[in-house]
Image (tube, rainbow, N blue to C red):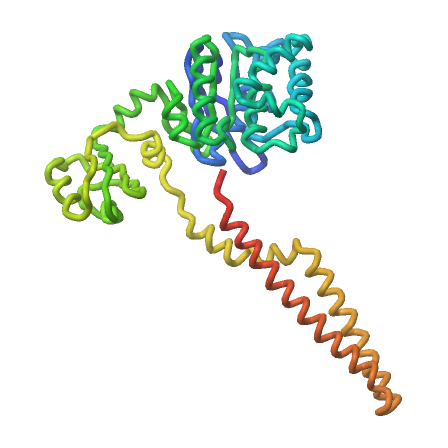
Length: 387
């Protein structure tokens, strides 16, 4: 069992974790959930003694953290920590040696796990030659190769395709059957819903929801409807009986106001789209998440993107600085030559004219680079989805 009580951590002016307590039993998959920046990774690092809490305690099976516990813990961090130039099998064996596993035994285990993840043919390749998904699988192998009793996974499905996500879920179920203590941190609610027995939802460093997942879904599931349809379902959120709607392409989850009769609601929906499926169900964890945490307002963030990013791009691009410097130098030389030519007379204007043309060209080049630099930076920002 891992038990944490009243954990608190502040970085400068940011209170990352505020009075978080949790208890994870053996043979359970515990979901530490929340949006990006909620405090999940900071909580994990305090649980594993990577960073000390400002206050609060952590106990492993009733005892405080000690160095001897390190070989009993399997930790998959969110950030990749593999040596890019090392060969795949060599990297696995190196990390196994840090856990005290003999070389021959470590190699045997590594080959078994590589075979299970369909990575055996990459054993002699460098890490940098692997895809992000395969690198993630290697990191998972490293985290559980020493058969740990306490397994902490921070965004384990990052970079994995659907097939490998299913494979990883099956492995986690096997580890659960072995009575391991498993903490699974993610912001992907669909993965957590399929795996977790208990959850703790954190937002802005505070616990906002916790407990048995089945009980939580029953608590929030009295007025939830799932609909499959053909047509434009954008009207669903505007129905007077709908408290909240999550509408996808030909599928929707509706949270009702509690006073709606199914027959009347179905009649209104069927008059606008072709209904393929209509059922009252427990809400998805994603719906509960949105209900508890809410949907962030990105209006101001988008405004900051349009206004601030081009300026930042100008400061970061060394080509613009160089072009501006060249323009200033050529302009100064041109002014000096004009002054000298005025003193010498008409026949001395050839050189100033050439430098004047060079000045115009330098100015044009500077303005062009300034414009080009702003556009890619904005496009890059808009194409980045939150982690």
